[in-house]
Length: 134
Image (cartoon, rainbow, N blue to C red; front, side):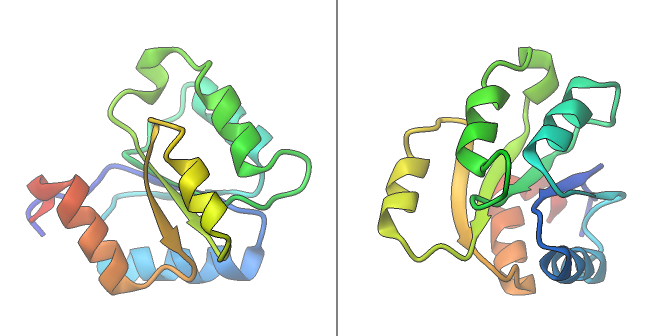
């Protein structure tokens, strides 16, 4: 890779999935930092603060308290500077075609990927959205 991403953020409440996703990203060596947050509320607080803004966010749909759709509704309200140039990907086990269709209603969402995150899928995604890395 020519250039690494500064940060990738996973928003998912499933600890084993987070472990696997983080391992795939670390093995691919494509980012300086991997952040994992287990709720939409925690992610909104993180993104609203003085955190390093992630280049890439992977968002799960099905989470307790605030699901991915609710997160997206509140994400829209963040100041533009807090979400500028962030590529947001839905990462879900959902097989419901309505979820993919609903994703298209959110211009903030750049794609829909199925869990688990695989190195080949990560590479394709990076080539598509971050060609400067290759």
